Length: 262
DNA sequence: GTTCTCACA
DNA sequence: TGTGAGCA
Image (cartoon, rainbow, N blue to C red; front, side):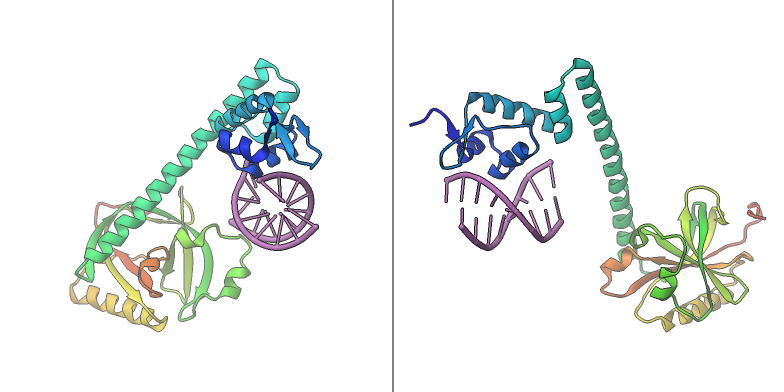
């Protein structure tokens, strides 16, 4: 019985895959003690220590190329730099995960509030929203793939955004996306008449908008002279089997709010 | 059981 | 940065 061990034995005692050991070899950070006549890689204590170091550094977030560098020419200063870098990396990862957590909460909350909602029309208090103009289309037409493809600026992550359709008095509908800072349009904070609904076919949309306007007239809401806003909640449509989730909004006039963007 | 290579996430 | 499959 040889004192050296095969790759699968090394893999077993170090809790890694055979593949992974060969991968480390390919990347030049772990050589076998020798190769046997049958071309099997054989490993001894040196390799066990070596692999232990590699796994530790991987756990600390150090990349394989950096591990190679640190093995080739190792100075304590470089080591600190490498570890500082992976510390920074984990910090940004935590931030990204927190953003994801927030987004999941938002989707969950909106989904719950839609499910529990009984009345179709309600008055809602809304925070200020900034919008950036994205595409303009004529009324009574629909967005099609070609139109999107021809836009100069590619739109990031359409699936997770609320898409805002602004219906002003003209014949055009302006399609906008949420912006971080003040941009092309601003929807002031305040009270909005709101209606949530699902639709299956495009023509239902125009009906809904008509109904909304009628409802507002019948109940004599003092609506602001601002565009009607239709919001497509693309991510909520996930929960409604091919139906699309929309909200119609129009701000209710209040005397103490200054009109913005003029 | 192991090697090598290719495709894939 | 690995994994899985197929082959010899």
